[in-house]
Image (cartoon, rainbow, N blue to C red; front, side, top):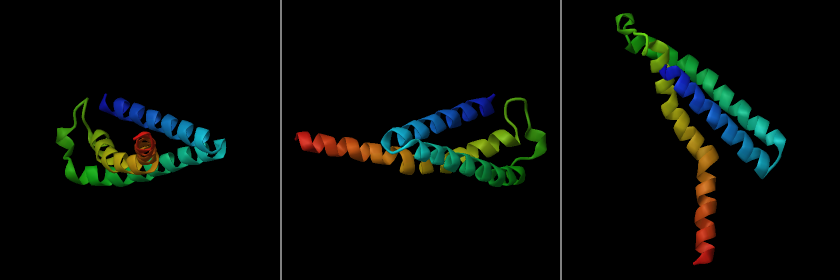
Length: 103
């Protein structure tokens, strides 16, 4: 159940990055943003699933929380920092610079 929520968060991040880069520069950059996100997701999930296997004993697996859920949660932390720096931070800078011009 938690995995579906995390996958939906990733889909929203992919759509946001694609739309932002497509409107700012070109559609090629939008597809490049999708590729970067998918690459980071697949490599990061492979790495965090190994860490989750070491941390979580198999007797703790339930229907709602298992090793895949733990690995996706561990992956969400560095991904959110990455997405903030590459896709959201410049939007905040743009907003701050536009308000400075008004003052």
